[in-house]
Length: 227
Image (cartoon, rainbow, N blue to C red):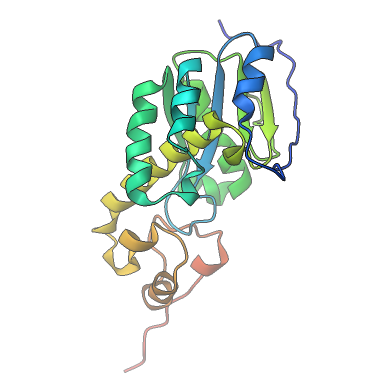
């Protein structure tokens, strides 16, 4: 049974000014139980869902991933992300994906949809963590587990950085599968973000059913030329 009486705490931590220090090592000594890192990708995209991952790593994985210089997914090449994702999945005690659809983004807003994706990822975990480390400064609403926010967490926690990589790989793969159906938007290259070619395609063709209509660049009415 999930315990709901845990005290939920939020600690905002700024990025270190000196050499990077992974918080996981110090937090393991003060936390009884497993720690899950939670992060999202696709928050600023115009197309497709916002995707989150929750990752629980064993203690032994921390030194292994430090040795291969794991980083936030945005700072890695595509090929290196793939290799690291494979290693993370092999090492992880458990990991799961959660997402919020474009319809849910439009019905609420991108912040609430992001929190929903994170909550779904955590609740899918088969192994219950003692603490969830959440990237950013917003707690996940109604999450029945202890949680702690970490600003720039993907630079300070190996578990969060791992979640960032897994979520990025999963979302990119999804967008690539959709790219052939919506080829006019150049999704294969921009992964749903607002590149110049993507914006030009929106002006020419209008938004697809999977574009975020609540985002201003997608609020375009295409006028047919009078003959």
